[in-house]
Length: 549
Image 1 (tube, rainbow, N blue to C red):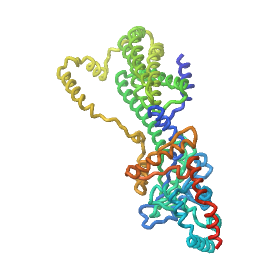
Image 2 (cartoon, helix red, strand yellow; image 1 turned 60 degrees about the vertical axis):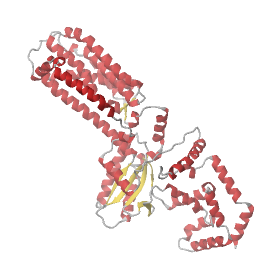
Image 3 (cartoon, rainbow, N blue to C red; image 1 turned 90 degrees about the vertical axis):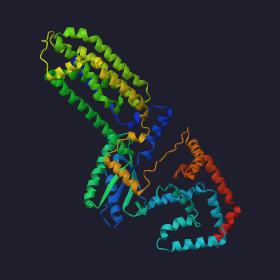
Image 4 (cartoon, one colour; image 1 turned 45 degrees about the vertical axis):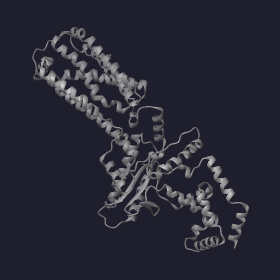
């Protein structure tokens, strides 16, 4: 029977999938579920920011070295080993990409203009302004770089597209950065930044951990190649999620290990028999394995956070075997032990399991997993204690009369009449009164960021990025949700006046909105109508005549 139980638990328990998503702790509601869905599917949340910096000991800035470092790193990230983990790398503006941006703005120019822009265009349509524009075009064409500008000038001789290009300035996060050799660098030329978008979401911690391992390896090689004159740091939700997952695993291993060690020391001195110690843990281990097997059958996936109380479950489950062995130690009869402890053990396990099952009414998936796992583990451990342990002992055992030092201490504590000690009773009453007042001052953590564990390296990286930019400015993402993209865009546009008022009042430092470059269908229709009304037949004829002169 024992082999069948072990086989059942090993087959199903080993197939369970542990989820390491910290979001599982967040209570489930329509609002929170929508928020989590947005964060899990939004690429902006998964971007990995990579910053290549010059060593502080270097007196003179060497941006060429930074671009060489970046180029070598990007080449490594585009190798066969790394490409399965990377969707795209952003941050280098090649001539082709700049040309693509210019053409996109030119072809959709009416959609990027507002009333102020049309006033500026109207002021440039007199003969003198057009003559100056054509003269500038001619000088640009005969310059050494004229072949690059030829297509742009022929398409847009009056240089109207730069009006749309200015809209890009609204996307500028910090004034401390500009371009150097097609890369984003700080103005002091000592830092270079680019972005990496992983192929997997930040919740896929195991796969993303392999990517970070590759990046760390490339960094070590490049640091050595450049004689440590330059280095690299990275930051983003992905490494933070990996740190959370590693910490959860480490916490589980640490707490369970400490619990086993303390139980080993305490029970070892109490029983002084190695075999008995192993039998103490047998029902607890079988109960934990049974709980995992049943969780796989019921859910397939379980939050790893729910297993974080493994040390608590171990302590509770061991109690049942401890009752059995302690009673057997003094009575020497297996039947007597079963008759005496069966009802108390069953009742105790049922009430404890019921208490844990109350967690099922919570909206947090991690807490529900914890409640189900704990209830199954505790109840099955009690059943295994009453069914697995008895056959492992002879019916008649020699009662142990020799007491150990630990046993003597326990007997003395158990025989102490706490209720008859007046001083102790008054001390408890006084503490109760004090705690009634101090309990009101307890505050619950309301900052969701505190749920995230960050390593020292990640904390240092965040602080360094903040020192060269406004990286730690609190970003609030306003997400519009609807049944269609156009409806979502319209909802987004209705929020702009409120956001502009907040910015005017100083509540919002700055904002960027998709409506600037991707307006709704209704807004596009209005902008095109404004464009056609502006460029009437007479105005087109006048401008064409002025250009031909």
